Length: 104
Ligand SMILES: [Mg+2]
Image (cartoon, rainbow, N blue to C red; front, top):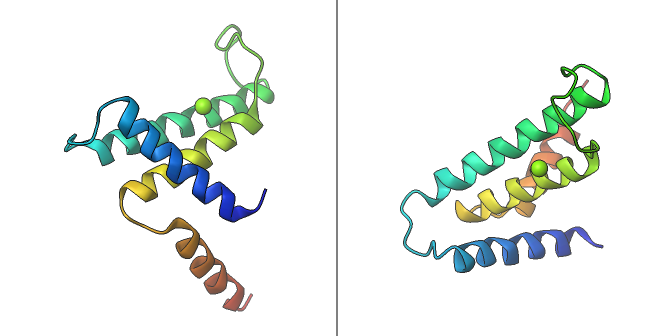
C-alpha cells in the first residue's frame, strides 16, 4: 500500500466517525479526537511495557499487539490532523526535508 492510500484511508475514517456518531456539529470534536489519540498512545505504552514484562501481573489479559497499537497511533494522528485541516502528508514531507538538511 502506498503512503497516499494510508492518508486517503485516514480521511475516509475521519468522515466515517463523524457520520456514524453524528458529530457533524460537535464543537469539541477536535478535543475528542485528541483525547482518543492520547488514549491510543497510552495503549501503545502499555503494550511496550507489557512486552518487556514491566507491567504488573494481570494488568493486561489479552495478547500484546504492539503493531496494532502503533497502527492505532498512526491512524489517530492522521484523523486528528485531518480534523485540524492539516495536510499530514505535506507536513510529514516538509518535516523530513528539514531533518535531512540538518548537519550532524
Ligand atoms: Mg489501541
